[in-house]
Length: 135
Image (cartoon, rainbow, N blue to C red; front, side, top):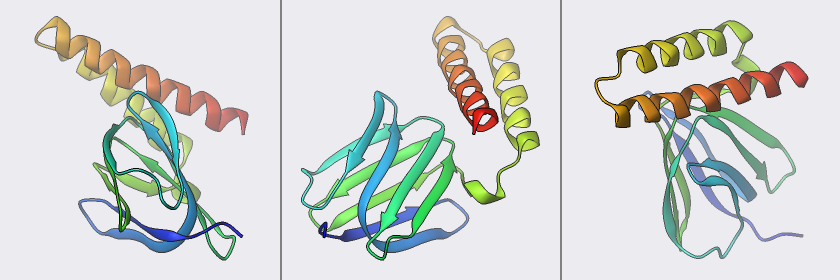
């Protein structure tokens, strides 16, 4: 049996999950990554996507996050999400609205750096939308 570690997922509104888990998958800015017990400490930014955690009792937890930070330490892992919603509560209309908002951010960008950042978020949300339709 895989060794467990403490995992917490926090949004600005509340603590969404605090559990002993054996594995966490996170949508990092530089790509998706996994964390298990004893992982080396590090800090990463996150892109829009799905955080997946497997509890030591075998239950699965999936949350859509809209950016934030993942902090892995010797004591466990904490995800500080800008926004987090359980995947079970997510609907197509919500993602469509997020895509509309991101499109407006591209159009309203004041400079090329801001426009590129907004295009990246728009692309990531569109990928998520396609993945949800395929599921």
